[in-house]
Image 1 (cartoon, helix red, strand yellow):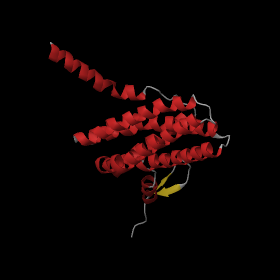
Image 2 (cartoon, one colour; image 1 turned 90 degrees about the vertical axis):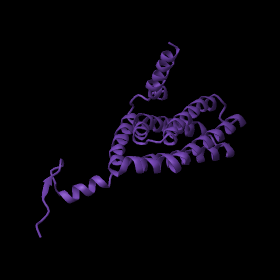
Image 3 (cartoon, one colour; image 1 turned 60 degrees about the vertical axis):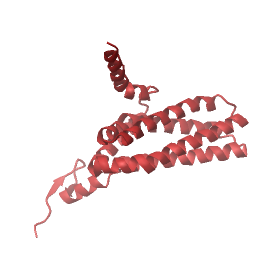
Image 4 (cartoon, one colour; image 1 turned 30 degrees about the vertical axis):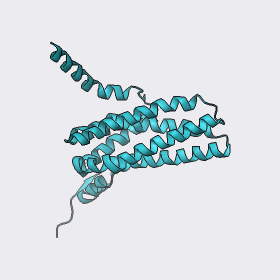
Length: 205
């Protein structure tokens, strides 16, 4: 049986083609990466809920971490994963999941400033933190139950691995201090809104 061919890696070590293929396949795909993000935020939200209930003084720092995690997660989804999902699926019901996910992001964006405006040890802060937790958990469950399984079928394993790499690189860029965009949803929707306005003008004419 012929020995597997070898190639030299960028680090100078020899690797077999078989090993290289295994390493590529073992990379975290888009869905695994996004689910990992969901788990991180869920844990932070639980800690925030416990902090507000017990009157601990770390609520402000936890909220800052949650806000940062959500901003980065939201941006990589809207820039990379959601457009790939939208382009891969065909049915109107599946397309609707895309728009619903964007809208759920927008609702979270509206709630966050309200929480930050409240005193950290107040009942209002605790109540709004609970609302935020419910919103995020509902959104994550919707994605994991409905969107992700459809994405796995429509995009395929290889496509999801490629998206996972792009998501990872963009996330690392944002964590290093790259600009997060508050207007990502508007930018994503702009072509569709423009087409809709043009269609209305043509009908009116």
